[in-house]
Length: 387
Image (cartoon, rainbow, N blue to C red; front, side):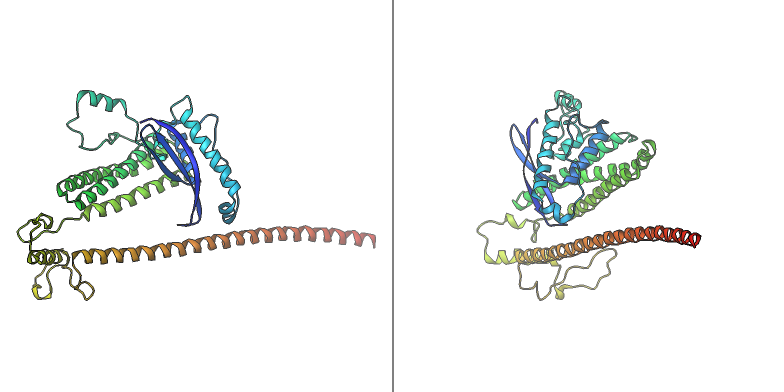
């Protein structure tokens, strides 16, 4: 897939997690176009990753320099935002049209644009000679390197694993869509593929974590670069945990008495059959009612869900709606808490800056007092000699 043009047609101001400006990057190919939103710090990271991956900066063009101004002023100053928008667009278009393809074909640049990786010589060879029987079905992931001892190799592996995260998300979305549309077999295949990719992600991420210490020693990385890469690893590990929970919480269609799916009943089913579906669905979701509870000892298993006054009058659809409502309420509370913490952080940083300025003024005043005291002593000695 060849990228034909890159534009930054607009900007947006977002309030979460803290007020900031994002730039709408529009990528156009011969068959489709898409938008990605990036902050100025993302462009700074792109410059560093291009330098690490290719060993040199982009010739003839740089991103607009970073200026020091207050947070409120940077958000409201449209002139500065427009200057950055024009400069950042020029930087991306320069990379795309440069005669040297090393930057526009790099993993860092393609990942920044959320573009699929370019086909390699190995993939072309495999297409010509048929599929590789050892390859995982549905996966176009680059093979794991035997060892990661250089900085470009480490960054390339990180880009590969970030792409794998997006692939797993796509498989999970496909699984949910197929299950909702009544295609359990297709959903099961997508679920199995997501589990396989997640296993590969966990194993290769463990190798990447161990390799960071090796690369830091062999390449003599600075403390700032090591911290930045540790943050990248932290984000990938968080993604692994989130994806692991999504894979384990696979949604399954309700099953009735003899194992047939609820959706497989004929259209001429009676009201009694509908009641049977609702009753079995409820028991599958909440477990048996109080009258059917048996006193047994379970080792390592969670107790079955119990009916409550809130859930008893609801059918299967109502229970799902109630669960989604509870989740939305919790998400809203977390968003509010995040906003409060961000405001507290901004206030704390402002107080810290004010204290630093006051300390500087006190140091300056102390030095001036010393100079004045020295001058007064000199004047006193002069007066004594005159007397």
